[in-house]
Amino acid sequence: MENENKSPEQIKLDELKKSINTFKGKLTTLEEKKDKIEKETKEIIAKTIYQKKQEIERSYDEVLREAEVRLKSVEKEKEAEKKKNLNKVVEQNTRGVREDNTYLQNEIKKVLKDNGLPGFVNSGFYMTIWYPKTIGEIFGVFVAVIVVLLVPTVLSFVVFKEKLMQEFPNNIIRYIVIALIYLGVIFIFGLIWLGIDKLTKKNPEALDRVVELRKNIVENKKKIEQITKDTSSNMKDEQFDYTKLDRDIEAGKIEVENYKKKRKEALDNFVNNTQDEIEKKIEFEASKEINVIVAEMEDVKASLTATQKEYDELKLAIAEK
Image (cartoon, rainbow, N blue to C red; front, side, top):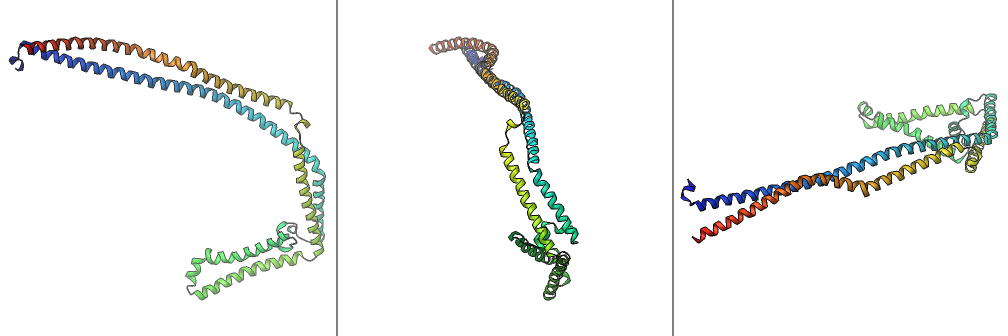
């Protein structure tokens, strides 16, 4: 109905305007399609390059780790062999001192047996609590006394606290019970201490003899430690035959270094050559589709230009009437 009131020229002008808008819309669509393909191409290139590089790194890292494991295995084998040899030399160098300690231990057993003393007399715990001679042992007695005093404290104020408060709500009675607990614990420990003291101190000279022998054993143990330390410091690989292990270690190191070198070369080659090839190949494939779009865009632009010209000329012609 609208076109009935329009002249043929005006109807033609409207058709041309519609065609112009259509061409512009098609051109916009083609440009968006082209931009999308270019963006996707860049993303594909970046993803492909990343994946290929990761694949190279994973492959070389895997074989490199395996080579390093083999190298560490041989190195551990050599260390174990060195330790074994060290133990042999230490055993030889300390044999006499260790035999002396065996003789001293046997002498202690004889002293204990001859004097009817129990075996626990030959212990650091006994010497610290019942026969202290050194500052350290005297300090041990002090610690033991503190521990004994703490036992009733823990029983009274931690373990049986709630029970004592329920059974003896009266503070005075409760404190009397706690005092009795203290006296009872101290009495029990005191009886134990006095019993062992009476049992083992019949012959102080025998105890002194045990102390002397134990001191000799400690001195020998220190001597063994020093011999072990000196032997370890003076040990040389040249004293033993590690030829095969050394060859295996050297071969392992060379293998590891070769894989590291090949890994670097492969990555450098990828960055300098393969990466560009991947980029060019993907861009070439994408350019085929882009070229079709560009050609179509040129056709649309040409049609748009011609239509726009026709529209402008017809519009001016109508205006001049």
